[in-house]
Image (cartoon, rainbow, N blue to C red; front, side, top):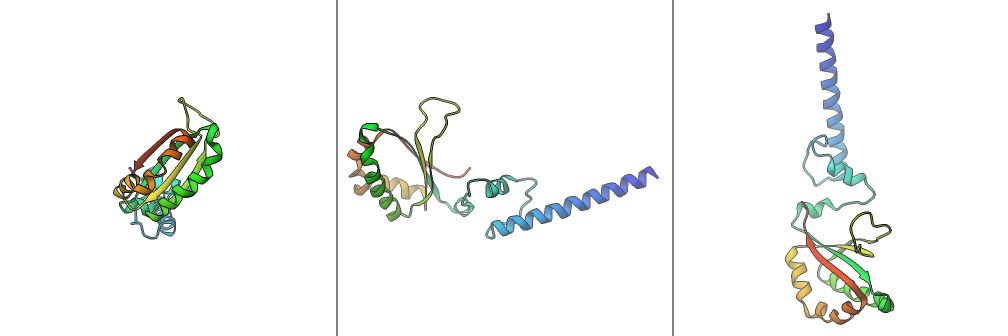
Length: 161
């Protein structure tokens, strides 16, 4: 009797696992209709990203898109010039296919030194697009104001892991 009860419980649990996995796959397909079917139980980072506080563009990950990440600290002596610079540089980003993913202000530094005041993420069609844009005469023309406005500036080309 114990063997048949154990076998029955195993079958029920197995069935529940299959149904649960099917429902998660169905939910993932609704969130990402372009994506392939997968087991969220084995790769739940996509689901966690999708329902987290920041929506991640997973279509960018499927293509060869790249993200320009900018960490910056504003020079307080030239803070008045910041908005003018940002307006000009965002126009250049847009002309090169850049789409803002998000802009963030540091509210608390948890570890490390010299945390930036702001972080921006801009998605581009490819890493080469970013490299060419940064070398362009339009972007280079903003060099002087960029150096005045920011006491610290880091720009990185990143791709999904």
